[in-house]
View (cartoon, rainbow, N blue to C red):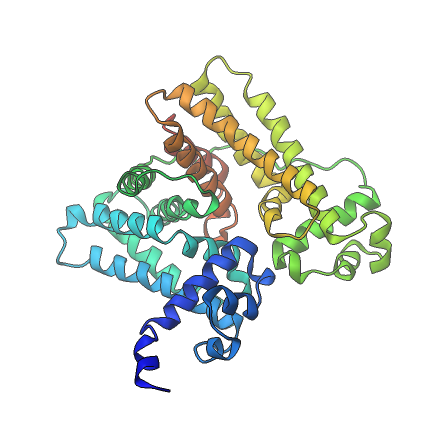
Length: 392
C-alpha cells in the first residue's frame, strides 16, 4: 500500500462503516441486510469490511454498545460533583435529548434489533442499563425525597422512553427546539404524581369457551413472534405451540407473512373499537384522557398490539404492508387531531412528537418486566400518558 493510499483512508473508517450499517439495519431490519449490502453502500469490498468486523452481528453490537456508552458518559458527566445538585437532572435530560435527536438510529436499533445481539451482549446491556437507571433514580430522589426507590425507577424508565420515541417516527422540528421539547416531556414525567393503589383492582377479562383452531394458531404465532421475533419462528414452531403438525398451520394461513397481516388487523380492530368508545366524551380533554386509558387497557390485554408494531420489518405483499402502516398512521393522526384541539397553542409537528412519546411510554413499559408487574401499573401508566399529553 502506498503512502497516498494510507493517507486517503479515513481514520474513523470503522465508525463510518458502522454508521452505514446502522442506517441499513434501521431501514430494512437486521435480517434483511447482508454484509454485501453494507459493503456496497459504504463503497468498499467485503474483505475490507471484514478487516474491521468479524460479522454482521459484530457491527450491530458495535453500534448499540457505542450508543450506550455515550449515554453512560452523559450520565456520569451530568451527575458528577462538578454540576450543582439542583441542576443535575436538567443537565442530564438536556444531554440525553441532544443525543436522541442527533443519533436517532441508535435508539431504533436498540429497540427493534437488540434481540439479534449475542446473548452476552444482551446481558451486558441489561446489566449496564439497570445501573444507569439506578443512578438516574437516585438523582431523582435527591430532588423528590418523598419518592420510594421503585417509584423513582418507574419514572426514570418512562423518561428513557421519551427519548427512545424519536426512533419510531420521522417527524422533526428544528434540532434545538426538538431537544427542548423532549426535555420538557421527560421532566414532566419525572415530576408526575403517581396515583394511589386501588383497593379493588379490576380482574383480567375472562375468555368465553374454547377458541377455534384458527384462533389457537393465531394466538400461538403472536406469542412466539413476541418472544423470539418474526424471523426466528418457523411454521413448525407455531404448529407445535398450537398443538398441531406444522403443515396443518397452512390450512389456516398460507404463510408466516399472512399470520402477521392477520395479527396486525386484529390489533387495529381492537384499537379502533376502544377508540370509538373513548371518543364518546363531552370535550377534547376528556376524550384524550379516555383515549389514553383505552390504549393502556388494550395494550395490557392485547398481545397482538405489540407484535404488530414490527410489521413494517416483515416481508409481506406491498399492499398488505401499506394497508397496515396506513391503519397505524390513521390511529396516531386521531390522537394528534385531538391533542391539537385540546391544546391549540401546540404546533402540529410538536403534537405528533408528543403523541409518539406518550405511546412509546406505554409500549416500552408494558414490556419492561421490572415495572409491568407493579400492582397499580395500569393506573400509573395511564397517569404517565396523561402527563405527557398535558391533560393530567
